[in-house]
Structures are given as structure tokens and as C-alpha cells.
Amino acid sequence: MEMETSKKSLKILGTRVDQVLLEDSLEIARSKILNGEKCEQIVTPYSEFFVEARKNQKFQEVINKSFLSIPDGVGVVFAAKFLEESRSKKGKIQKVLVFLKDLVQIPFYRFMKKENFPIKERVSGVDFVKEMLVWLTKNNIPAFFLGAMPKIGEKAYENLKKEIPDLKVSGIYSGSPDENEKDKIVEMINNSRAKFLVVCFSPPKQEVWIDSVLDKLETVKIAIGAGGTLDFFSGKKKRAPKLFRRIGLEWLWRLMIEPKRIKRIWNATFVFLSMLLKESLNGKNSK
Image (cartoon, rainbow, N blue to C red; front, top):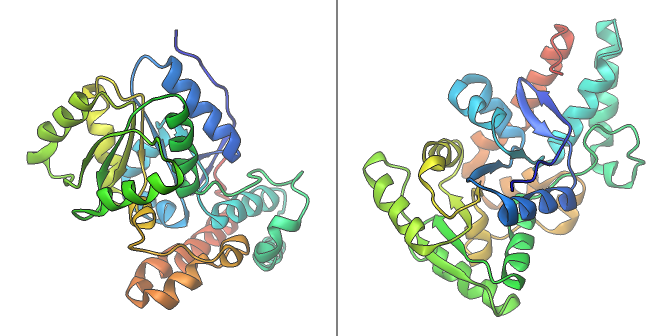
């Protein structure tokens, strides 16, 4: 019997995100794996997702109908708080002042009382996947790693085994989201009998790809688009120091060590913020 789990959600720039904590997300995913009758997708929207989804209708549709949409970014926490507060303000000057106030508070949000925060914490996709792998191991449930560059999945598995010795991964394949590989990949996953699928093709390709195969996956109960997660697990990329992550400046760390990401970081920060403010000033706050 499939278990239904209620969760509140809201929309930012027309794209859904659920008001869940890390532990909520883990509980929902675990229940689905143990009791689910079909495969469902978990998405991990951060600021850049909302910018892309605004111009990519298919991407937005996939996110909005996903089983679980976890808030992976301090920018998402900020956006939800700003849109909620600005909705009650009638004047444009008042809205701008609220925007500036909330913006300045970003580095300190972890130390603030969260009663009035629609989304109370950032749920890191990397942390979510790792916690799921720990739980899966304890329950002898296999996972499948798909995506990233060749050998990255294997290196990620090797590194994870140092922390999770009994980790059970029944398949690893770099692959691609190309249509001509889809049937081959689906067959590999089904043959592996995995129940948890980690897909690292990068957004929006990974989310759209997962959506296209949900009905074809026979044993997988949860599929998650996880972007650079395998890169982090493998050591190919380093996560930002905890201080940067806690104060919402992970984007600055990324810019310092990967200057070529400047366009993506621009979209995730300045473009996203300007779109939020514009939507509020036009009185079109998503609910």
C-alpha cells in the first residue's frame, strides 16, 4: 500500500518548492521506497532552477508535478520569505525596503528565529543523497549512480565506501541523456534491481530525462536529479567550506575557484534577485 505524505508548498516565479526540512525530506523518501508502488521524482531547485524554469516551460512542468521539491539553496529561503512579506505591502517603496532588509539578513538567517520563515532551512541535495545512502545501506537496499564523467561514479563509490563500508550500489554508468541511449540505460537500471536512482546529467536535462522514464523503471521507487553530487563524492570538485554554505555565500566560493561559471552564478544571484523584485513590484507574487 502506497503511503501518502502531506506537505505544504509554495511557488517562486511560478515554480513549486516544498516547505520541508532535511529530516522531513528523508522521511518522505524513505516511506516511498518502502511503500511506493511506482517510481517518483525528487527535484532539488536552487536559484538557477527558477530562472531557467521561467523560460523553459517543460522544465517548470516537470518540477511542478514532481513528487518532492526540496529547497536546495539559501536563495530559495530568502525568496520565499521576501515574497511572503512583500505580499502584504501595497507601496513599491515598502516592497523595495523589505527586499533590501531580507537581502541583508541572508548571511545571518541560520541564527534567526524561523517562525515567520515560509521555508525554514536550505536542504542540500548533496547532504540529502548521502543521508539516503546511509539509510539504504542499513536496510540493504541498492542504489544506482547514473551520469557525471566516465570513472567519476566509480571514484565516488570508492570514496563513499570509506565512510559507509557496506554501501550497496548495484550499478554505475556515466551515460548521457541522449534519446539513443535511453532504452539501454533503462534496461541497465532495471537489471540492477536498484530502488534509489541518482542521476547527475545536470539540470534541466536530468529532470526532463527522469520524467521521460518514470513509467519504464521497474524497481526504482525514487529517482533524483543530483547535478554535481557525484563530482563532490569523487573529490573531483570541492564543496564550499561550511562557513560559506552557512552564510549563503557558496556562489562566491564557486566564483573564486571556478571563474568560468560566472554566467551561471550571475543567473543564480543577480538575475534571480531582479526577477523576484520585479514580480513583487508588479503585484504578481506566486502563491
